[in-house]
Length: 525
Image (cartoon, rainbow, N blue to C red; front, side):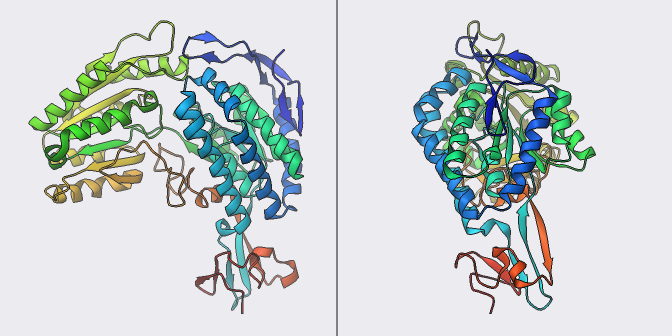
């Protein structure tokens, strides 16, 4: 029997148009569990329940919503072993340390961070102008659809990850659409979330789960009048179709689509510590088989002997390192196709490529090379994202040409510049950073981009096509909550009718509010 969907607080049989099964990428074998492809009837029922839950959640206190998030986080921690086992079977990601020791605590901790922000109200930008009698703050937007990615089954999962945490903390119910690569893992999370909802007394439709829909129904879902907004992480092609549908209906959709994350290594950095840079790059590029949205897929160098030595060492290390397992057959096929596309545009295959391994989802570690002249002749083609254990090295003749390459880049999540710690690259750095900064959401110095810290200062976003809007982040609380909220202004509204955040008395005693032009935790005097 196919797995049940979670709609309106009940696990029930789907109104399905078919079923699908996930694949164990370590063996390339189909896993036994079947999952339904929901018809529009399931989507409609989930939307109706979410609309009712959104109304009920407006009457909940911040403490109640925060208690749900904290209870859910506790349940996730307690279920570490079963969640890690399920995700390992479906994604091939290592149970330890990756899943159980890194991604799972990150997931529960970001839920707790969201709870703390919800409770404090620091995310809502409460603003009070006593002279005009106008007060404003951010408030819930309405039901949020979350489409989770394949590469972070916990921390970006549709019913467990950052978008989920932010949407709930902002006061909205979530309809999760599981990623087809790890449906069982997502189902286990939804069970825990429902148990937390029941235990804390919040509406059970605060979280709902469907596994897959047709493309047409997915586009209809994000455009439905009952939806407040959508969070999506995945392929550019599918994301843009959802965006077109949402845009046509005037609905907000926040997308994370693709990023090659350029790494610029200046000559002084190579002269100072070339071997260390090789180690750092290899670690970053092959970590998780390169399946991070911040994977360094593009390396930019200036032509000299040190750069040639760097390329030679990376080539040798790529060739001498066993390839990791890719997340699914689809990822393996896509990576092979992307490598072939880059070669078709003229990139030189230095090592790797070839055929997908028999018996598991894997492609040899792949390093490609092109000249800056080639890149500038076809910048769009050479920015084809090769999601996985593959990187492209581009060598420029001089600094001006290097800066031209950077100026031709699309938007990216990250950009990194390595320079001489003793200052010999400072003038070059200024020129490179000037071109690179507008192209990225996060700029790094002397540090590979792979890690995304769960920090209030983090921006996990960037110009298109890295995301659909450069002004928002998917990681970093409280900023990430704003995506799922609307700004409401209260003009001449009587004191007893104001939300607690805008009352004269600070609701927590410590919530930051902007009163008459200054941020303060004081009461209105």
